[in-house]
Length: 139
Image 1 (tube, rainbow, N blue to C red):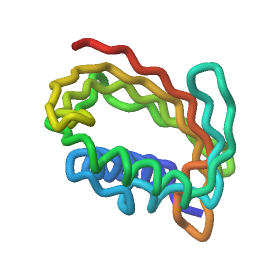
Image 2: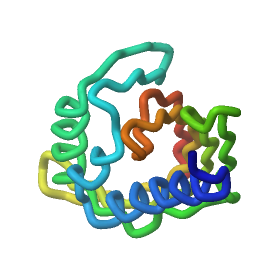
Image 3: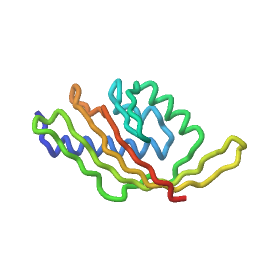
């Protein structure tokens, strides 16, 4: 069994990878640490989505936006189970992006987002299995 500090660092690396994925528009990188299926709670709904569905959704999204900022507003909180096989992470970020509209005009958007993600360790790798999120427009 790995030490809790190693697991915590591995989960923080998942978070850092998610940041890189947003800033570079890389849907494959973003979904590389997701389980085969992920429960998503957002806007009053609950959905079970496949990694492929999430990858396709983010690829389409990233094709119409470019992030300039995706930064923590406070350090992520990581909580590990006693057996070291499950964890959750609480995150709060600020984001800025340029969105390309249907008429080819662009729009600068600012927002804050927070979420709690649930992770399970499979074959030594942390995979996200659930997420509940909230976004506030600050434009």
